[in-house]
Amino acid sequence: MALYEIAFSGQCLPGTDREAVKAKVGQLFRADAQRIELLFSGRRLVIKSQLDAAGAERFRQALERAGAVGEVCAMASVEAIDLAPPPPVDRGPRAQVIPRDRYMAAFVDVDAPAYDIAEAGALMQVESAPVQAPRLDLSQLSLAPVGADLGTSARPAAPAAPDVSHLKLAP
Image (cartoon, helix red, strand yellow):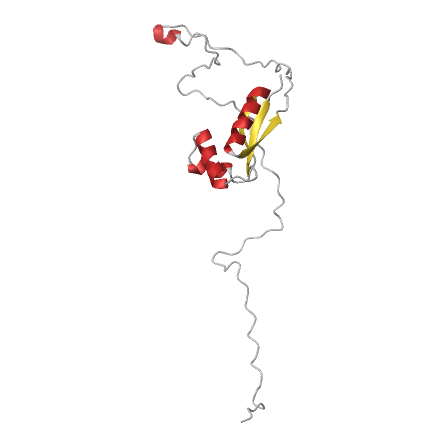
């Protein structure tokens, strides 16, 4: 069965007053002024979808009686795709809940991993091999003596001021 949707772009029928159409569409949808302004913003909005042909035509005619131009569009059909089941995953041992009262009986069918509780002071992380420090050649580096001023270089002497004694200002 083909399904349809009703779209509206804020267009009015020729010869109708836009404000009157807004009022009628507002009554039709029982919408406030903010939603009506959104409907008449000029953007294409899908008002209703998943309609059969007769329902879509009735909806379009209701919009037309209010003075608005509604667009009936066929919805693209979606094919059913059979997905392959996910590969089996080894999830390890599973917990078995033995109910001790009515409250715990609700958790009998819970599928959860069976975590063990470690003894006090036991290591929880798997031991890993120690990491070897990288071999670096630092023979080209040296240390500055204690109290040395690091990172400052001698400032060059300021250039001598030019001799301007021979220049005169004209009156």
